[in-house]
Image (cartoon, rainbow, N blue to C red; front, top):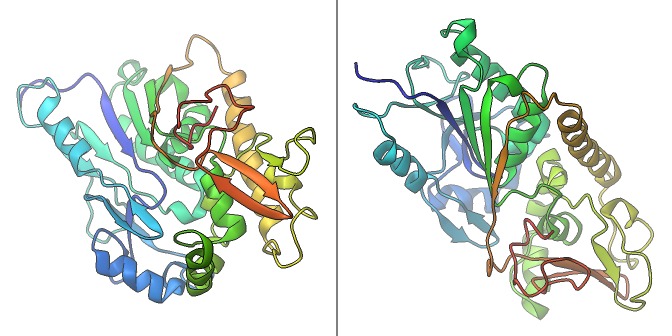
Length: 339
């Protein structure tokens, strides 16, 4: 059989990075461009109200840009793990899909791919991740479970990994959490989508596409996952008064122009997202230093994602300009990790 890896490596994708299928096993959200186009034409396919249960069946293998969606593919990462790990036999990769009929876990897997229903948010995914890892570690003697797991989380997946490690009893099993482009304190891009809605381009094009994608926006605003990615820090500056306090997303109510109405679930979604981030911070602050795993973050310069938020005459404007009050001005920085 060959030498087994010392650690179990778990890969957790970001928002939109999991293939979601219906009860018949038909992909609803996935790699194929036509599936994304189908969602744009009929957003209720991924509405939590109309389709509360979808089954995560795989990680997105390929990347592509179908405005307004940018899909992150994980095929390259998986190939790198297959080819680059130091093991004297083929690396075993298993995809955790316990809700798929007929699925049987490969408990000898070296790498576990963990798709999840990103619509439900970080907490739901982290609790399911804890169940999955507990099952995977059960085959090891108790003395061999400590420091056994390395979790690699991309974007939202990094938040899932950190929430998981803060759950009771999980930190001791974790050797390290590696996060790639993770919005540890939220991202202005998510704020733009939740408040202004899905759209493409600027100026008149922005207005036209926002109207065309209005149904997509309504569905997106029903996902707790979208609110979990909102900035938790003071991120929004009033352009008309540079000396005014910088606002948090929860303080936007009453500040927008009349035609910009926050969705009915906005306040509850923001509050739940903030609480999720607080729970991560509290669990890690209270963690025994002897078991606290290291977090290794990777972020990017010149990434060009939206990085700053302004109020201009009651309109929320999100740009890729580095905000002067952040410590990384001049980076053209990764807007998912603005501070």
